[in-house]
Image 1 (spheres, rainbow, N blue to C red):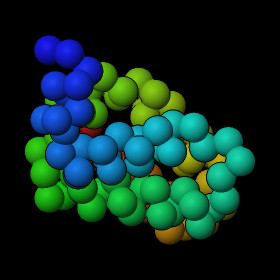
Image 2 (tube, rainbow, N blue to C red):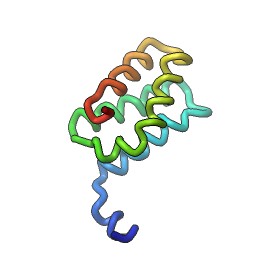
Image 3 (cartoon, one colour):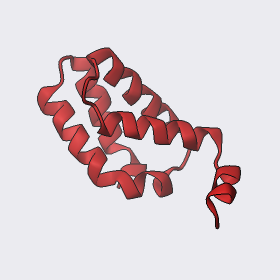
Length: 92
């Protein structure tokens, strides 16, 4: 399948999920509010869609970002969202 074909078969939620995952993994220069927004969007998509195929290739990067978020997080809400993101069945 070519990149053009992949782009045609990608749903908007998959693109949004990919953007959210990248924002979570690349959290440099992000604020607590930005991380909260990224985690909220990520969890919202995972609650409405089965996305194991989209998450599985990036699971190690996500896990590292979740651990950093728990260690260095600035707010209780960020920690709660991080744990929710880590425990979602799509992340297994």
